[in-house]
Structures are given as structure tokens and as C-alpha cells.
Image (cartoon, rainbow, N blue to C red; front, side, top):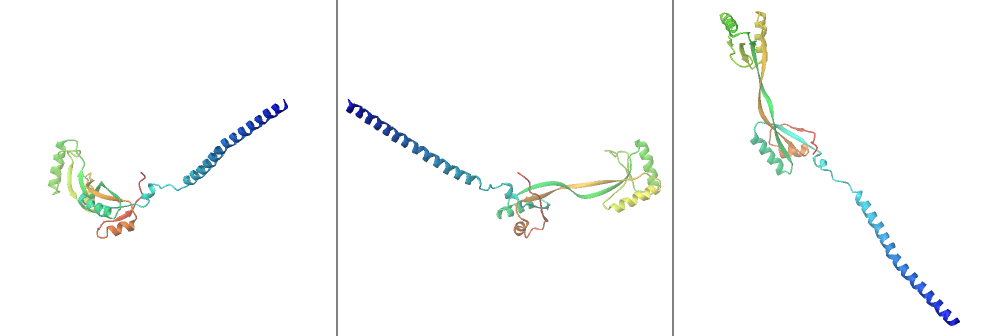
Amino acid sequence: MLARKLFVGLVAVNALLVLFIVMNNDLEPQVSSLTEFKQQGEHLEVVSKMPLVSKVGERSECGELGPLDSFAVAEQVSRRLLSRNIGNSIYEKEVVVSTDYWVIIPPRPSEKQAYRLLKQLQLSNIDSYIVTQGDYANAISLGLFTVKTSAYRIKEKMMGAGFDVVVQEINRSQKRYWIEFFSSLESANLALSNFDAPISNKICKSH
């Protein structure tokens, strides 16, 4: 009877020992996995601290060249810059290239009154003609001048003679072309050494 109890006790001890070994083996991979996870976390943290490359930084230096008289010349300049790996773009604007000065007596209330005034001016040997259409219909033109001082000299003379006279500025515009480039002025000057056009700094556009 005693021997049987001892046998049962040894079996129970062995069973507990086997269970302890199995459980201990199951825990070790978990510890290893936890260590691996920490290592991966440390790696990810280092990567996140790497500096980001800014697209705006690629255009930190900008400038423009112009005005250029024709699109053909602008294309030639653009190709020269591209051959030096300098990005650029062409844009156009309407610019005032000249101003004329029109001396007129403002429109009369009727065509009949305008012709009466015209006859009076011509009898005084003053060059003049009637404007027959547009915003200034029935006005009296006293001449179109390219020099501002000449126009205002006529105005003062006519006003001294008792006439109501104004000077209307007429701006004449044409298309002109500019090139915006994305590099330093030094690099652009080297690429465009034989082009006679002003180059200046310009604030880079954000994209």
C-alpha cells in the first residue's frame, strides 16, 4: 500500500516537472519577440528623424529675364537655359510702349454747334477738325502729339484765348515676354552671357 502511494506521488511530481518545462519553453519566444519589437521600434524612431526634402527648396533661388520683344527670342533663351539644366517658363504681358497726347476741345452739345466752333477756329488759322464718332463725337481735335510738353503748350495757348481745352493721354501697348528661371543669378548670367536683356532677382512662387 505504501509503495503504491510512493509511485503515485512520483508520477505527480514528474507531471508537474514536465508542465513547468513546457510552460517555460512557451514563454521564451514571447520574450524574444518582445526584444525584436523593441529593436524594430528603435529602428523606426531613427528613421523618423531623417530630414525631409522640400520641393520648395528646389526653387529657393529664382529670377527673371526680360522684357524680350518677340516670342521667338524668348524660346531661344529658354532653350539655352534648359541646356544648362536651369528650369524656366515663359510668360507674356501687355506693356505700354509709347504715349501720345491728344489736345481737344470737349464734345459740343450738338453737331451744329461743333461746326460753328470749327469755323471760328479755322478763321483764326488754328489747325482743327471735328471728331465724328466714338466717345468724343462732336469734339474738336487740335492735334495729336508725341511730346507731352508740346501738347500742354497748345493747351495753355488755347485756354489763354478763352477756349476750354483738355489733353487726353493715349497709351499704345504691345506684348512683351519674360522668362522666369529657377536658379541663382550667377548661373543664369553664365548661361546667357551673350543675351542683352536685364536679369533680376524674383521671389519664387510656391507650388
